[in-house]
Amino acid sequence: MRNLFVALIALGFLFNDNTLLSQTELQKPKLGILLVFDQLRGDYISRWQDHFVKDGFLRLTSEGTWFENCHYPYSGTVTGAGHATLTTGATPSIHGIVGNEWYDRTEGKSSYCAGSFRWTSMPPLPEAIAAPGTTVKVRGSGTPEKLRSETLGDALKRSTNNQGKVVALSFKDRSSVLPAGMKPDYCYWFDNSSGKFHTSTYYSNKIAPWLSDFNESKFIDQWRNKSWEKLYPDKDYKPFSGIDEQTGEGNGKNQGKFFPHPFGKTEKDYYDALYNSPFGNDVLLELAMKAIKAEKLGKNAQPDMLLISFSSNDSVGHSWGPDSQEVFDTTLRTDLLIRNLLLYLDKEVGKNNYVIALSADHGICPLPEVSKVKGLEAGRLATDKFAKEIEAALQEKFGKPTAPAKYLEAFSDTSAYLNYATLKANSINLDDATAFIKTWASSQPAILKAYTSKEINLASNSSDPLLVSVSKSWFKGRSGDICFILKPYYIPGAYLTGTTHGSPHTYDTHVPLIAFGGGIKNLLIKDKVSPQLAASIIAEGIGISTPASAEFTSPKEIWQERK
Image (cartoon, rainbow, N blue to C red; front, side):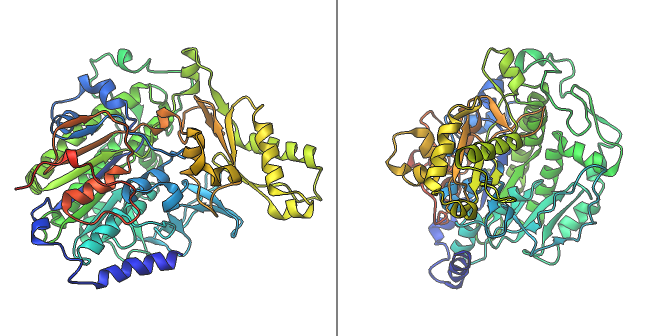
């Protein structure tokens, strides 16, 4: 299937006369930009807009189209799925990226959404050494080969006969790899151990001179021996977020629970802490501006594409939670970053010569401890313990299988993968086993719903919105046999502090969507939409074909009449 998909994309590059853009289309803006802020929840803009400068977020909303009620339509709201959705215009049930990781039955182990051991890092990275009592998680180097749909990058290459440039940048590998598609010109991400950006041999055996120069510069070292202080030290943040040290907050990367947050003294500690602060975003912005200038993006004969995802918002939010002063400060600094980026684009590319779709890959759940203080039922589900309880319940129901066999083969995110061989050896029907687990789960305190693969396969006829959202995250051969939906304000995982995302609840599905740039009207749209629109908006904005699996077309009402 993958080889057929790659072949079809490659075939599209061969057709010359039919794929080059017309003169009318060439009058459109020449640079499309997918601008992602990882974990920038949809309510942050309206919640904190009184604290923004006039030419950051407020310029976007006052000059562009703001889709105020934008929600992901699926349940598995994680980084890999979100980035794939934004750039393909499809849901995980179509593009195949059901999570950051999933269990691969063929390999008998976890499969990472954007990496493979077939490829290595470029430049080569030093071997990672685990700290005492820990292990190093190795998942291969970057590749988009697990995608099953065409991306914006692929669509641009197809529409311009491979002449338009595609540049993808992020701190996270998956946040660069998945948007870039199969054949980007450049796809780079950050390595915390070396403090340098790199790529993989899937893309190239060398890096661009402008990246090499950036890696050798000292730009990234400017925060050494400093601390993350509040942007506005005289401003009382408490009324707009929470107290500076709340129960349930994490410690960051050895940065402490309250301001100021020091940066680590060792190399790796420093880079980890930089990533886990708003200044990681500043590093990526500087690199993006270098790329725009060096590659003359937006100044070439055919339109170009810049896919940039800022990851630090996510790292900060996981550590301290959405109601923290750290997230408030990071969002204020994100506002300034947007101002600086827009000013640079106006000068370097031309004010009406680019189109931006700004969004996020998911939202974030409040810290359970903060929710409890507000009188809400909330908690943490230790998934390792939960998986053992599933196995115990199955054994109590169906009897113990012959050791060392188990009924549960794997548990990934909030999905259970049953061992088909064990079920067969004990004459147990898969539907009977999943039906039992579904009934058992209904009595578990953290579980709202459980859905079997049989139910998910029939979801197109369902009136249950939760089941429909689960079905949009389900991909045959990658997803589990039963999916659990936690109650609102419950989070899965082994951590005792911090928070996460990945549910169909509104705090995880609600993200911004703002269209801005040449040809975009100033509108506020309150109708509920999906972030899938981002792909079609950018494609329409620069006059290329939409990605082949995109579900929606660009809304006609957001476009000005072109002269």
